[in-house]
Image (tube, rainbow, N blue to C red; front, side):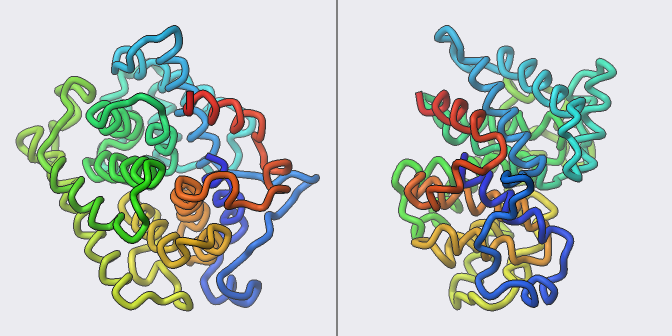
Length: 330
């Protein structure tokens, strides 16, 4: 969780800069110092919404309850609306999240409020808490990852990419070696290819332009994820630490590309977490989301020991990060 926030904060100042401009300002691999404002390293909506998901999970599981869609859905809705209405929601939030939350605020059921054609990276930049939640079985982890995406992003690739992002974080936290991760993720995608979690997602979300059955709907998402994983594999055949990672796996504005480019940056520097998020921050696309995901991946492997100690004292939302990370672990 701290890695996600560090990457988010490091990538925020470069989000709307071109690659050449970033490279004029920073040496390779990219910015390595958090930008402080009044002594605080500010994050974006990526960290804010990840904290909202973590808080919803904790509330759903309190008093020993099992995680169910009936307990998680209203809590996600409530935390997302609290974020949407917060004065701190001033960090260039994604249009899809804002549009869906506006509909939720009017009382529209989530499977009508969601933006069905959107697979923006807002779906999976916030999913890390699901991966880290102690005690979840694989089926519930996959379903919860997809559900938290579906409240705002209704495209099947948004759901699949969120599931796959959670699978990556969970696998590395559980000890899967970074070099084995691409093969692990391909196997996960193939295994989930036609699994539609109807008890979590309901019977309306899949109806529309993306498939004639629930299985066809979700398969569309997994197929697009498998395509971007193939691009990741190709990029890793001849690792290039100098070129813009977005050239290989996409600019990260959409969910599957944010996952792949964040993974590419991490896998270019699997033993150097600060360099991994620096590389992710030095990208021409959605650099804060790419770096947030790269930070989540690096943090899953290296833990707090992978980051400069002083960063924990200056990162925005430090107390919430500590509290909710502890709750996830317990």
